[in-house]
Image (cartoon, rainbow over all chains, first blue to last red; front, side, top):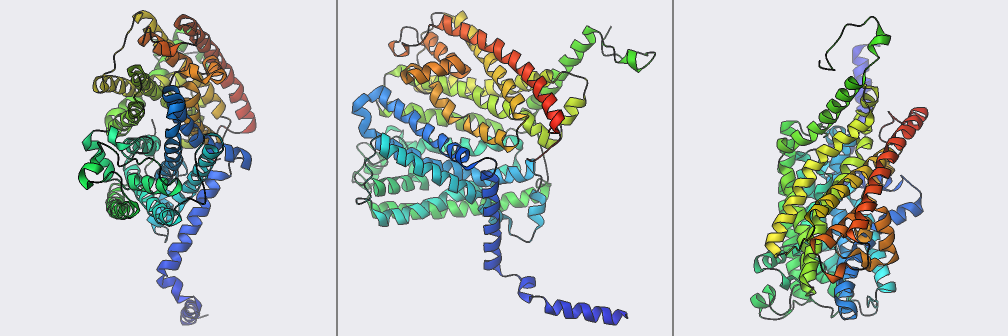
Length: 317
Length: 292
C-alpha cells in the first residue's frame, strides 16, 4: 500500500470521527467529567466497608458533635437551657455540610497527589481540573448531607427539636440551601488551592479552617456574645446568613443568631432581627463575593503549582 | 569505642552478631532519624503555625463563647481551654501515630523500615517524639493565649502531681497510638476512615468540653479505657482544686494509677501487636500492598 493510500485511509477515518469530540463540547464534556468524578468520589468514600458500617461512620461524627453541645447546655442550663437545644442542634447538623464540603475538595487534591499519585495524570487529562475536583467534592458533601439529616432526625426524635413540616418556610429553605452550598463549595475550592501549595500534613487544614469559621458564624451561639469586630467578620461570611436562613426556615420564630439585644446587626440596621428578604439578599451578596474570591485564588494557586512543579510532588514527615 | 564504627569481621555470621551496645545505639539513631523529618519539617513549611495553632485556637474559643452565652461559671471556660490544649495531643496521636504506618506503606517506606536492621518500635518512638514537638507547641499556645485572653484562673495545689499526670497522659496516649499504628498496618482505607471516626465521638465520651463525670456510666467507661478522658479529668481536678463541678470521678491519685496501668498495657500491647501483625502482614503479603 502506498503512502498516499495510507494517508488517504487515515483521512477517511478522521473524517468518520465525530468532529464534535475533537472540538470539544464544553457543557457536555464538563458534565461528563463532573459526573464521572462524582461517581469515583462516592466509590472511594463508600466502598471500603459494608453499608451498615458506612452509615454508622457517616453519622457518628455529626451526632457526637451535636451531643457535645447538648451536654454542655445540659450541664449549665439544665431544664432552663433546653430552649437553646433546637438552636444548637440545627446549627450543629448544618455544620456537617460545612466540614464535609470544605474537606471534600481539599482532600481530593491530597488524595490524588500524596496517596494515589494520580494528580498529574488527572491534570493532563482533557477534563477541566476544577470540574474534576468539584465532582470529587460532591461525594463528601453527600455524606455531610446524610450526617445533617440524621442529626436533625435524632434532634427531633430525642432532643425535643420542634421541627414541624407544616410550618417549614419552604421558599426560604429552597433559596437559602443552594446558595449556602455554593458558598461552602467555594470555600472548599479555596482550601483546595491552599492544599495544592502545602505538604501532606494538610489533611487537618480543612477541619481547622471550618473550626475557625465556627467561631464567627453563629452556628451554636448567638453572635452578640462576640466582640464587635468578630460580629462584623461573621456578617461578611455567607455561612452566617445561610445558617440563619435555614434555621429560620426549618424552625420559624427560633432565636436569631445574628440579631438580638446588643448585636451589631441591631445597631446597624435599627431593628432586632433580619427578615427573610434581608437574609436572602445578604446570602446572595456574600456568596457571590466568596465564589469570585475562591475562583481567583484557585486559579492563582493552580498557576503557581504548575510553575513550581507542585502537582506531582509528594511529601511526608 | 563507637558501637556503630565499621569493623572488619571474619564473615557475615560474625558481622550479624551485634552486642547490646551496638543494638541500643542503632535503635537510638533510628529514633532520632525518624523524629528528625517531623522537627525539621516544621521549620521548612511554616503554614502549620496558621493552620495548626491559630485556627484550632479559634475552635477552642468557640466553645468558650458557648459557655459565655450560657453564663456558665468561670471554671467551665478553664475546662474548655484545658480540653482544647489536650486535643492537640489526641489529634497528633490519631493522625501522626495511628495512621502513620498506613501512610508509610502507601508511600513505599514501610518495606524499607522492615528491611532495615532496627526494631520497628524505634520508628514508632521517633514518630512520637517528633509529633510531640508540634503538638506541645500547639497545646502550649492554646493554653497560654486562651488563659490570658479569657482570664482563666487556675487553682493548683499539687504541682508535682499535675506534672506527673500530664506526662503519664502523654505516655498513655502515645502508647495507644502505637497500638493503633500496629492495628492499622493490617487495614487499608478502613484505617483512614477510623482515624476520622476517632475524633468527635472520642471528644464526646472523653468530656473534652465538660466534666466527664456528667456522662454517668459512659464517662466511667471512658475513664477506664481512654487516656484522654482519665488524663483530662485528673488534670481538671488538679488545676481547679476545690471546684465542686469535677466531683463524681476517682481522685487524681487513683486516676494517675490508672494512667500508669494504661501506659504499661499499651506499650506491651503495642510490642505484641506489632510483632503479631508484622508476621500476619508478611504471611498475607500486606506489607507492600498499596492503595487498598
